[in-house]
Length: 299
Image 1 (cartoon, helix red, strand yellow):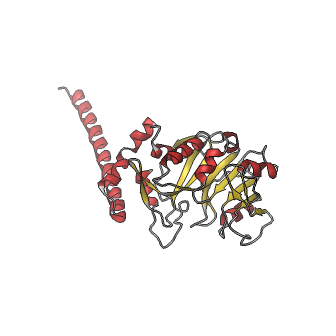
Image 2 (cartoon, helix red, strand yellow):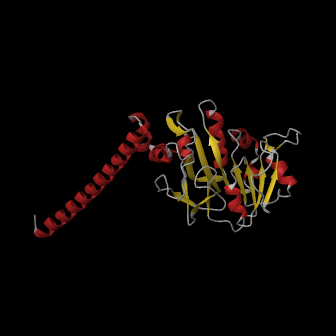
């Protein structure tokens, strides 16, 4: 072997060694993180399975794979911002409010920090909750009614459908709306009945989604329906009494706060952040274990 070829061989071997070093280093880092989370939450090897296989499943876009549908994407060129409380009652949106005039907020109780912060941005917030008699405080931008959201017209003034409310408020021709839902599992039936042309009107859809073992088909179909027009860009595992449940062959946080953005308004690429994201993910209940680190495995 002449000197020139020998030098080439040394260079090639050097690149191979560098490549192996960084891959082994990254693999050890992954194992360290997995073991830390595994020990903290008392998981077993079966719980960890999806971490090593999610890229394959995402790539294959399995039709009945709830995890592939829940996989967040990054909204290119847009910053995420937490609106409202850093704990329960706060939600994550994109910092893009230029065209937004109206918010529809369902499920109020006594926590209105989300609504207040949007009202402070000069956005009118239409608030509905049939379980309370008044708001904790008033704001010139608040428009509250003691009405509950229902999927089908009942001809009962206590409950109305989303299209009915849009018509009632003169917003049926509006776009770039925000929809927030905290309606204790009623979200599945509501979304199944809302026409796609109504869903398209919302720039952002955010809220609590309650998963369980009894209605998996409905839950999967609902997320698939929203995903036709909107892309998930953020998730938060609400730790208030939540648990990890079996959803087919996957493990899933049973109470997820999900943020969707309209696909017509944004371009998306691969989500590369690690949960929890400081200042964005919120620990809903301060005195309970934070389940957000598990999203690195199950989502």
